[in-house]
Amino acid sequence: MDKNACRKRILKRRDDMDPSEVKMKSDAITENLKTMDLGKKIMVYLAFGNECGIDGFISYLLEKGAEVYIPYCFGQGIMKASRLRDLKADTEIGAFGIRAPKKEARKFIEPTELSAVIVPGVGFDLHGNRLGFGGGYYDRYLPGTSAQCKKIAVCYEFQISDSLKPEDYDYPMEYIVTEDRIYKVE
Image (cartoon, rainbow, N blue to C red; front, side, top):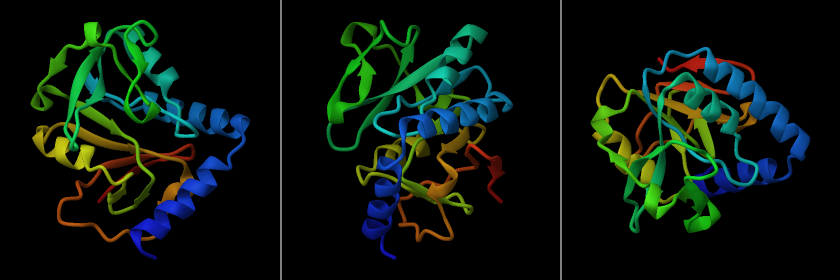
């Protein structure tokens, strides 16, 4: 199955999820994420639609005193990580209808300073390959992180495919966290 057909199939299944199923699975993913040692400077994403909601995990990190960063996307696939201190006060609806840092709240960090990046996606395989939305934001951003920075995919179990054919520019994940388990990519 080609990438576009795979993307369409998975997004249809995700879009068809009931809100209670999204909440239940997202809560389980949050609990699995809490068991991981992610260091002190963690980049997360802000979910939209029926994406895995990790706001509870973000609140947990902030309460623990971690430095939390969220994506800010510039045009043409360029992304930076901006500090998040308050989930509601520091964000607004940005490009693509996704929450993003407000202009007055933007404080960027170099990718090399991050200890972990939590990455959303449409689909993944157990080799760490990621099927994104096609914009290439994470594929351009992740190579700038250090080798010690953990690259963690978050998805529902049904978003894992047998095998995705990566392109040369696709950046692999080291862990995949679902509602059922944490996969360590070998």
